[in-house]
Length: 421
Image 1 (cartoon, one colour):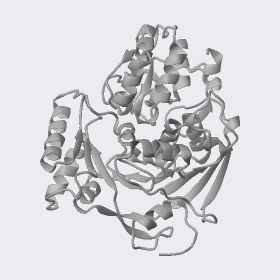
Image 2 (image 1 turned 135 degrees about the horizontal axis):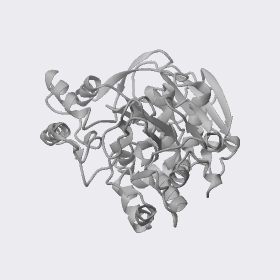
Image 3 (image 1 turned 180 degrees about the vertical axis):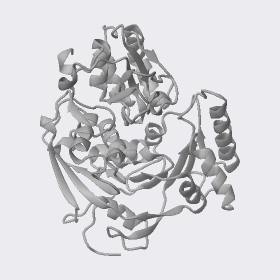
Image 4 (image 1 turned 30 degrees about the vertical axis):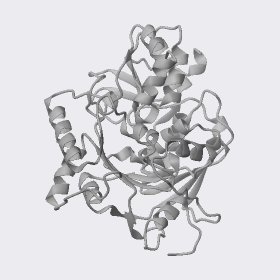
């Protein structure tokens, strides 16, 4: 192992491998946690059996989470869920479904199953969410996931790292979604291709864990292999209060080699949206006030957490959704749902004219509970606005944080929250 100063990605890989973790090297690594969902799980289970797998490497570190097309929207999704359910039960691995689960990338951190210093492999591209905890987490295909289930290890090419420094402090109108869309707008959707984004600065220190999860989640939208936050007191407090096992937090070394450094002033970033059809098509919300909308979605693994739902609820308190707009609110987990019940947020939403649904991915990937028709336009707190992502190929998605989404639901057009709140 090289003794040279390491970035956080390099340090985590080095701690899980006997190989020399330098950028570009291919290292065999031990995996701390591996999971799939109702879409990727059944094919992974089939591959596991094809390769002669008998038992997953550790029943407490392998999971099946049914969250995408659940509650099952049709016969095909019911069959998929049944296949995933039967494999998980046969293996005795961790398993959750309707009524006991949430969107996987919100649920797993809450359960303390992904932790600082971990290597986490998931058959879902937004596995990078757990980088908010200082875990190297990345998505893979079903065959690779099946091999991890069987062996407890995989190979990783050590990524180069871009150091992203947010100076200043974001205003009360700005959250993690605005910061990450601004970054992607600056470097482009391939700006971090197969690289690690490592986040630093006073602007990051000021963020809640929920905002950090949002940012790490969208590292993949810049092409990143992962998006990593060096653990601080907030990270450790979150992890210690929830951990299902012991962990060892890791940190980048002073003098680590970065492929580049990107600097932004969080204090100057305004409420920001990503216009169709790329997450990097960033523009201040105030410059988009002429864009009329049909639907608003508040939820997903990007912005369905407690802070997101709470901000949206308070923005809508005592108000009514515009007559032309359909508003769907989906808390990302039952922990969030229960808080929304206890604090009266669900009543605020329903009195405002919104629908509130059980935790599920739902409309985010065009699954169910909010599909768009031809010519319709949605402001969404999800992470992707590709052509056809939420329905018809001639519909449009505008990505935004919860405050912009709530403000837009009130006016029927893309709206900077400072205009109405």
